Structure formats: structure tokens, C-alpha cells
Image (cartoon, rainbow over all chains, first blue to last red):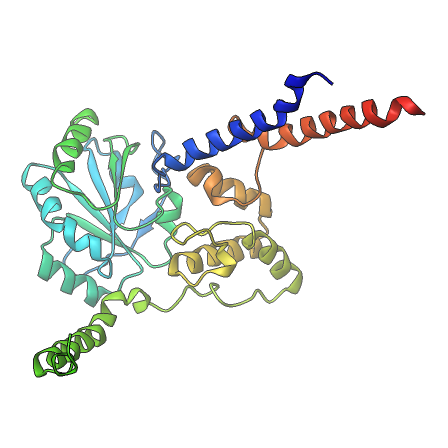
Length: 176
Length: 146
């Protein structure tokens, strides 16, 4: 057997170490992106999550006005952090509807009283059904829905200050 | 630190304060203010259907936990997913159709049963190649003598 062939297994092993080392050094993407972006909002109808705002139904999203669909919950800590930025978005003209996940009306009311209410409507999703239907994997998440009821963008995690202009731009692209 | 320093009133007060904060902090994590979904922890009445549901739940991945199957997780969202699986099985839906519905939303992430796709084909091809190579080596070493 010629000399160079002896080295082949070692080279393969070194190659494997190289690939594994490179992959380990890459930042891991923790986000599970929804495959529903670019598609029609699935059918749903949710009862109101609180007494002073109506519930929501998927049919309402085809009235020509783009909206933000904010998936949140009163028990969700990052939702507190994003509340002021939702307020900013509302002040700058964004129409925001909420879906409250696994929540009680009194908890929702207390949260809104404490942290502000930027929503025009809030539906209550007790079994996370709408969450599954639109491919959302946690709270908070925010979807941009265009005037024809199509999902055009998904923001995963709480909205930070730097996300406000991005979401406004996505709303503009969706025809606001 | 001296023994006196360790038991000084200031440090004692600080530890008591920390303990108090720990006790008061717990309700913040009260994700379970709603009872679990009806079929999150309740088996289907038909044992055959429940078996089908169990098999599917063991191969669906929880979306908000660290790599657990939904039948193995206490998270409320996993409970809601179990409810979805059970009511759909009870309604006569095919388990693979339920998996496909979820993969249509969450991609490969949600399923523990790998499918051949543009990114996963090496998983299936590489073992075959290795077998072929190993077979060729064995044949060269031992096959010729026969």
C-alpha cells in the first residue's frame, strides 16, 4: 500500500473536526419562522378578550387596511417590555389588533390598565389554536397583515425601539 | 470575611430580603392561570385512537421547550398541541395529515421524523455510501482469496 493512503483516514477525520468546529462557532438561530408568511390568514373567529374591545375574526382583515396582529399574553414578561413600542406604533398610525393567548378577561384588563391599550380589538385564544394556525411559536410575536388578509411579515420576540421603523415600513409596503 | 462579618445584621437583612423576593417572585411565572386544554392531559375514550395519538405526539417537537416531544413536556403550549392532536384524531383525521399540517406552518423543526428534502438528503445518502465503501474495502481485503 503506498504511503499517502495511510493518511486518508486522518484527513477525513480532520475534515470532520473542521466542519463540526465551524458549525459550532456559528450563532444558532433560535427562531422558528412561520411558513405562513406570504399566505392568506387562516380562518378564525375569537371572542373578545376584555369587555371594552371587540373580538376579532379573520374576515375583518380583508377590508383594505393593513394591520399589525400582535400575539401576546398578560402573563408574558417580554410583552410588558414591548408595550411602550406598541403604543409608539399606534401613535404613528399603525392599526393594531391583539390575540391574547391562554388568558383570563380580568388579567387582560389589569395588564391593559397598567401598560396601556394600543389595540382596536383583542380576541381570546384559549387553546392556542390561532397561534398554531398562523405558525407562531411563542409570545410575543407580531405579524403584518395586508389589506387583503395576507400575512406579509413576522416579527419574533418583543418589539424593541429599533423595530418600530421596520414595522412601520413593512406596513407601508403592505399598502398603509 | 470574618465570622462576625458573615453574621452581621446588614448581611442577615440582605439574605432575608433575598428570600422574601424569591417568595414574592413566583406568581410572575403564573402561565397556568387557565386550566389546561380539555384533552391536554386526558386520554381519548377509544384506546385504539389514543394509541395513534400517543404515537404521533411522541414524534412532534414542542415549540417552546428545549428539544422535548410534546408528550414529554409540561409547557402549556405542548398541552395545547396535545389537545389539537387528540381532537383531530378523534375527528378521524389521519396522523400523517396532522403532522403535515404542522410542518406546513413550522417546517421540519416540529417533526422528529425526518423527511427527505433539499437539506436532509445527506442523512439518507451518506450511510448508503459508507456501506458501499466498507463493502468495497472488505471485498478487496478478503474477497480475492476465495
